[in-house]
Image 1 (tube, rainbow, N blue to C red):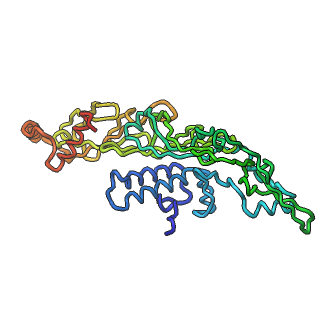
Image 2 (tube, helix red, strand yellow):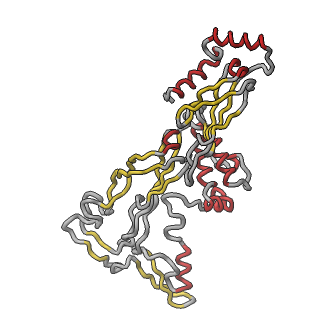
Image 3 (cartoon, helix red, strand yellow):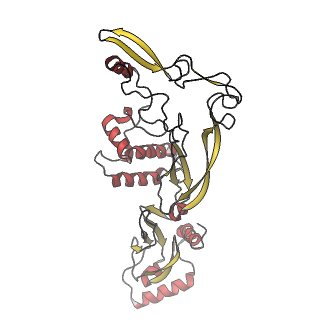
Length: 373
């Protein structure tokens, strides 16, 4: 089954700006998040959205995708792009330029591949940051042979075929004259070495699988899909080259009460019609604790209030976003003195705001005020 166009997945055109791409990703991630959406295909759609965002949010990958589509070179983790043998093109360069042709020496030091680790964190951990340890499976230098690939006490000899160069020269006569082609030595596979007795632990690879504990510091204000780079914690380098890097992709669990858009927080607060009609001062839960909010008399349903500085900390600068509070009420707009008196009596007699249909929502607000959510 062919993949859907990434722009179609996010509901965007090819001219979409980075901010539009980010906004569409955030909206669809919340819609299809498995913790929120229990439809059978929600998880598959969530993964499809993440895959589309991973490509379109990266300028290099986006440019490649715009030019080649799904069949083009997307790069990514663990592959290294165009690393490796160039197939028949190498032989063509050898034929015309007498060997070499810019081909990489198989014995040259090369950086190891990058690794990716997906980490799920809570809503509040993303807002306030977190220090934690993670364990990742990775390759390390074999502890028995110290990376040589040979059983301790045995010899590592130079390859007789390539004499340690890792390459084999093949001489051909052509219309252009005598041509020398250089290829990876088939005897030692480019290592230039011959191991008579392979290490019993790593079987000659010089590497072993381990679980590595890494301490990470998640900064306050990260959002869903954010990537953190840990230098040097990727796969081992080749032929003495440096190791690759570890990229940690953060997936933020949605909150039951708060919603986030950028560095702003959104929530809904219920009001009785008495509170809305006569005005009141209420307690509103925020990420920093409870704050007082004055409700003017005659407030209508859908009215929004802004609590400045009670949002998410800005990631790369000082300050915070805001919290936006939307009230849900139905109330008359004009009241005479008798009506006001009746509403006051109704409030005293009721003792509990809301109707039976709203009780669950009020219960949720109470839990937030008590710090249970």
